Length: 100
Image (tube, rainbow, N blue to C red; front, side):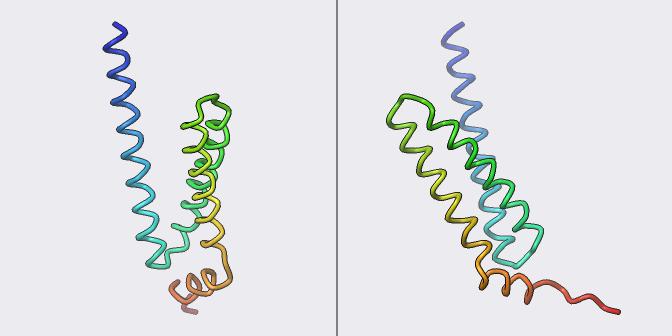
């Protein structure tokens, strides 16, 4: 039973990891296209990643702490880049102008 549980846990972790990577790639592509909704969604994903990384750093294992610290630093860096003045100008330029 323990072996099957470990296999299931590893499989679940791999699937969640692949979904997460897929969402980040999707967000990178849609943000590159200047979609403002993608910036909001990436912000939500970033906030979740930061919270998960902070909670993950509570573990005593050094490798997990380093990996979670890298996740937090990367997520914060992405969010800072998404909300720089140049980024906002880019999103404004790429968004369709309302017709009156």
